[in-house]
Amino acid sequence: MKKGFIANRLRSSRKSIESPVESKIDTIQGGKFVWIDLQNPDRTDVEKLAEKYNFNLLNIEDCVTKFELPKLDSYDDHFFVILHFPPLSQKIGISKNSQLSIFVGKDFLVTVHQGDLKPLVELAEICKTNSDQQKKEKLLGKSPGFLLHEIIDVLVDDLLHTSRKIIANLDEIEDRVFDETKPVARSIALLRREINRLRRIVNPLKKFVLEIAKNIKRFSDRGDEELTLYFDDVIDHIDKVIETLEESRETMEIYKDTDFVLSTEKTNKVLAVLTIIFTLAIPSTVIGTFYGMNVNLPGGMEYNSMILGPFTTFIVVIIASAIPAIMMFTYFKKLGWINS
Image (cartoon, rainbow, N blue to C red; front, top):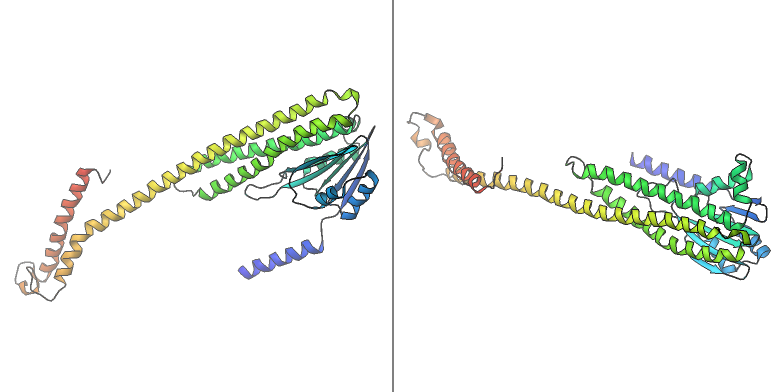
């Protein structure tokens, strides 16, 4: 069975190598700007845009690197920012972040990602088609700053959904912590890792969204004064996520300590029972050892003329073992070492 599992893993690995994720470039024309969305792009695709819009080559290098730290670089005619988000399909316990690279100028917005940010992919689909004309006009009818706000807003809302999933998992773990029949230590460890991973995403995100709100003013029209208020709303949502994660982390610490205390108490109970059983068995072990020797003792086989006959030795051993065991049990009960 293990060989079959390894073979299936090898086949799936070959399949993923033979059929890489398809590169996709969408050029969407807005009212006053163009949005270029690149999913799983080749390096040459990004370099072509760099020549057209005069992007810095170091930023191009950051775009094609899948695990770059968040950053923001500002230039005279545009600025470049890298943000991290968890994918919507993320399962608890799997450490993987999605990187979004953004170039913003006066008349263009370029987004580079691996296609695993579903809210962003859905926005691109709306803008390419006429499935939701009102939404499309809202996204493309003003400036790159408004579109950038919508992109960050839907991704931050996704973070809110992820934080709600964590709260749901906390409620489930709370029930399992006080259920001795269900192990919960692994679930606590995985959820703690997930909370810490999200904190590492959200805490820098707030800082960079604030920087974006400052830099976007240089590339916005005069009628975009309310854009700052829109980004303030995004900051409020990020603060809610941070607050939820902090509360969840504190709750997880409580559950971890509670599980440790209950597990220790359960272990102590088991050890107490085993210790009492071993202690009560000491008299019978000692007496049985003496009667197993080749020496003459009271009640031995040489006394088979007694009324009990050949069972005399057995009866004597049982009585001699039971009396001290009963006395010990009574004494332990009086001390409170044995509870009902």
